[in-house]
Image 1 (cartoon, rainbow, N blue to C red):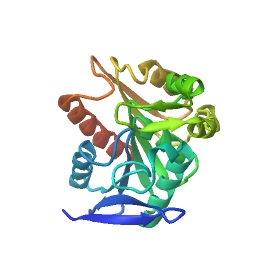
Image 2: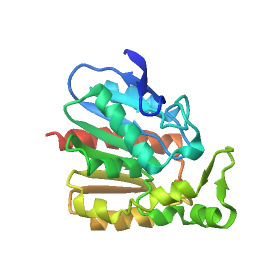
Image 3: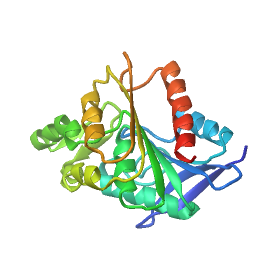
Image 4: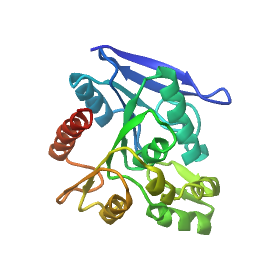
Length: 238
């Protein structure tokens, strides 16, 4: 199983770090990590499983995360959308599916309504509605910034950009099948948001809840998500 590291130029002299897990054929699955995450750990396992199921898999770090250039405080949803666009253009698949976890789910949803090559979207505990970030927004309005336990921070620039991306535009425009996996004990992104989004989509939606799972899934639940993901993707291609 070949795994090739790439440095992909983005903008302003910056680049993002990506890994291509190669498989024969033209099926592609691109992974988008969460807000305070990166492409390591669970994404390595997910990509290797994807290759076992015949998919070329790509994982990468958004700017300000992991091994990519840039500072976390400078990243926005717009910059993440651009990072994903450039990564996809670099590999230039004829079509592809997206897997987005947490904030990566929001990136995946907004990308799917922009790029006709997206065939399906899989999300785990996705951020959909902007109100999921209301607590952070109020902190920024009060203190000028919101600093996380990791030491990373966001400021008003993030929310000035974020306001451009209401989820209603996705609800109206999304026309590819969607799978959503969400824990019922998630205290970061309310599972009710996924129920609401699923009820508004005018496309095929698989929504599965995982009892007692939080925002981070247990190893057993993660394994179930992977099995369900690849089984569902295979049914979409038939």
